[in-house]
Length: 278
Ligand code: NAP
Ligand code: COA
View 1 (cartoon, helix red, strand yellow):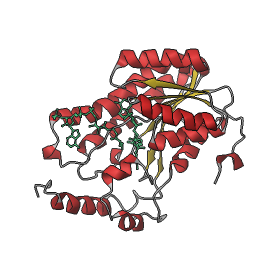
View 2 (tube, protein in one colour):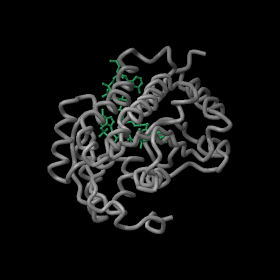
View 3 (tube, rainbow, N blue to C red):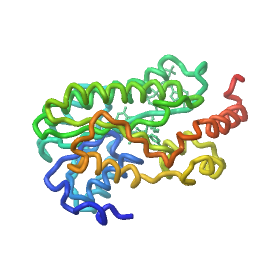
View 4 (cartoon, rainbow, N blue to C red):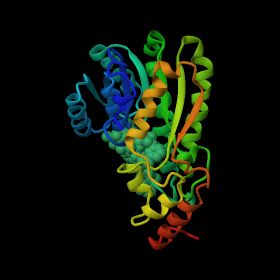
């Protein structure tokens, strides 16, 4: 389905959407959907090459795009990126905190620095992003969408670091919704299920096991970047103007039977790779 069959092509005309991790995967899918409804886009990530390729794709859809090579763990770099985006595109109306890192590993094998890296990118990086964008969001009475994950509310084997980081994000989301509502700033999270063709699925779904996992999802399929992009446009739009402090799960119902099917597969895979101590 094309987003323009539901939303006006100029719904976000003149509005700036800033996306951390916007150079690839789900976040690039979100960017494409905002471009289709007229938004200007700031995209941030560490690799300038990746951002350039994404920007070319988004400009071909008619968007004005600024790129910002920065690490979300570096607060001064984030502040600069926000200032630059404002100069190029105008104040930020919608902020997507999508940058994240993940590698599946048994908890007893995650090094302290490996755990810290994931928490620093996902949780601290999301705080940096919001803090650096606050004045612009206050000015536009804008909104924030955090890209969370099922690991935030359900244990998945070998995801201790990611679960802790994403749960922290969702709790921070509710805090910011509580505190910043008086500035007109709405804050919500989206928890995607497995999304086809992304780095997350490449890292987390053992080769050859996609079909078995799909069978454990009530809707019988993995999601697409458009599934998450369309939901993001809705949540950022005036249609959602009374929605704040909410986690929206977009996973085809995957969480309903729990994480057992996935846990079983990844444990078997890890054992085969000699990584599981069990
Ligand atoms: P992805 O393409 O690897 O997206 C992550 C993005 O974050 C990349 O563009 C990466 O670009 C950027 N990034 C990573 N570390 C960064 C840092 N320190 N500073 C700035 N940017 C950084 O993976 P994805 O699978 O689409 O995941 C996107 C989001 O969806 C993540 O928040 C993930 O947790 C969430 N999610 C994914 C799935 C899934 O099925 N894929 C399911 C649930 C939730 P650089 O490497 O160039 O920095
Ligand atoms: N297995 C075990 N440990 C790992 C690891 C892996 N696959 N990848 C990194 N680490 C550990 C490192 O060993 C290091 O710890 P140490 O100092 O104790 O050895 C620590 O994590 C930091 O490693 P570094 O290479 O400096 O990572 P980084 O901080 O630059 O990158 C990651 C962050 C590790 C999350 C990296 O995977 C990444 O950049 N991911 C982005 C893309 C992504 O994950 N997309 C999917 C989103 S769902």
